[in-house]
Length: 118
Image: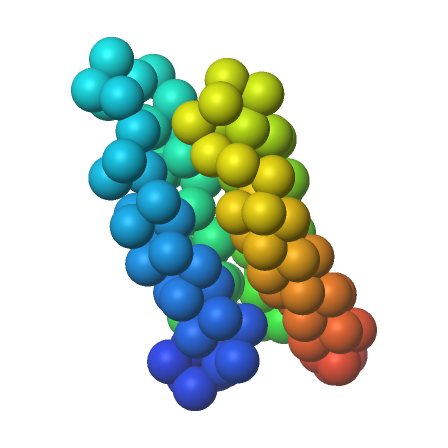
């Protein structure tokens, strides 16, 4: 078992959640139950799955939850692209978030490679 609160991937994904929540505060109210909900859900899923996986009894289980986190990052990135295409965010914001998402992806990949599956 790992202490998820000490993991850089968890801390970085928690920072991403904060940034996302600040961003969507400016979205139109009409998206409250649509895109806003989906963005919140996928952003929250990333650190939540890291935390859940860290509490599992095997690294194989942890690896599966890390994979789910990467899927949630892809989902979040898609929703941000949709937000850009709908003119809810500008290209600079999208690029910054895309960089952060890619960085977390790489961090999760490297961390997952370091897990011992014996």
